[in-house]
Length: 156
Image (cartoon, rainbow, N blue to C red; front, side, top):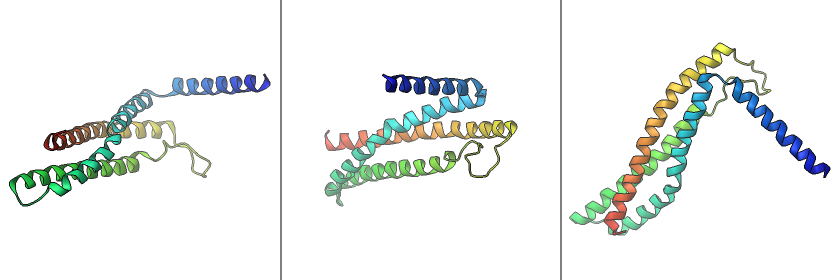
């Protein structure tokens, strides 16, 4: 019973600190967090399709030849490869742009940023994130289109 009481106490304490943090977030931080969730949701929607792209690329390979129909298969395979590479590039770039902290000291000896610096950081990152949302939306469309085109071509 003591264990359960301890676990409940820890959970309630954690929820308290999370709710306090949400109340102290600036408008920019809240908007940034909401937009980041949207971007990650789009990523999470299409990421599982990377395996499907790989399978379709392999399936198209033996059908490629010098005939007109073979060229159509080749074009479809190239679209799939382009979509796959675009996703890998986007993820790498996105991670590089948004992997750093938000100016808080993490025990590494760096001073915590001032409130104004953090606000500027969020405003700048928010503008960048808005562009990334457009980019990942276009990427989703490219991936879905290349998959659907290949499936139609293969009669699936």
